Amino acid sequence: MISLPSGARIGLACGATDLRHGFDGLAALIQTQLSEDPFSGQLFVFRGRRGDRIKLLWWDGDGLCLFCKRLESGRFVWPQAVTGTVHLSPAQLSIAGRDRLAAATTHPSATTRGLRDTIKALVS
Image (cartoon, rainbow, N blue to C red; front, side, top):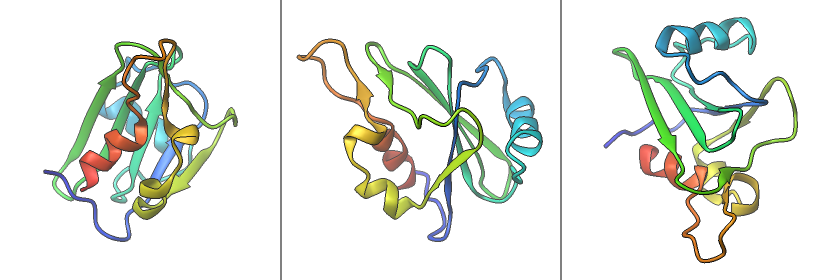
């Protein structure tokens, strides 16, 4: 189980990210494009161009942790901004509506799997 400190923030990187990047590439993007510190303990979330994949990068105090998720159907709904970061606290994430961070599915019978559920499982 992974638990973020109570004051940790969650940053959603707006726009599409090249998810071929690994630890070092995503950390460099955080520093250069988002002007943030990847070693701050903040959780950074990136979405791929197609919208069906996300990567989460987090410094846990010992090293960088990289988590990935791929949806079998549908895509993650993301903020409309093209650049920058949208910041959330774990509390904001837990009460965020599915319409903001949910996985939009093309099949009504498919189970909705959202970004909120993914991150909530990591931080609880």
